[in-house]
Image 1 (cartoon, one colour):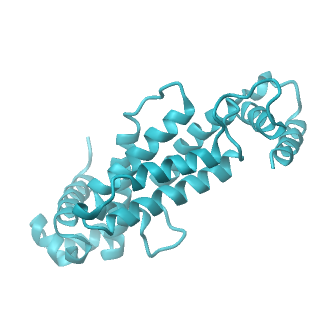
Image 2: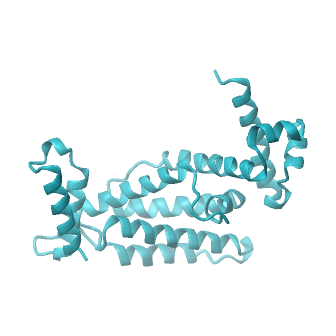
Length: 233
């Protein structure tokens, strides 16, 4: 059972989220939210501090909605196809919830991300780790994650800025495929595949292995992974 304060916060966030999506961030004053929620402005300040605190809470709420949708997408068994599906879901969420998306990724507060943003990053790394373990990545997973996030957020923010009637439906899939072509190989590596792809695959396998079954000391495993990452460059 949630306490009264938690219940009030949740209700106010739901009202603020509805106002944000209906009228945009410019309409999201603390006074407007308090009026829509049927409370005194002082009560809102007690719960969120100020408008910045309310916006931070809304960003967390938005990421929670995003992650709830992400977790409904099961793995297809093909890590590259999963990358495609993840991209499409990300863009679709942004276009359906542009005001939320601008809070999540268009923030004017550099370096500040809610916990759910880290969860989203970890989920992306899971997909990329599988691709690396299958020998499908051309670059290390961490770099692939940075490039993927830069490409998909840039594409989504660009499309949000264009009236829906003027959006080219080819932009997102073309950007997606250009990125995937740059980051992945066509198939899992054959015995004579490139040294870089095989090094990445072994590095990913070591990273996902139970330390108890790896016949190396932690310092040796770390050294081997460092060598593998050097070979993958």
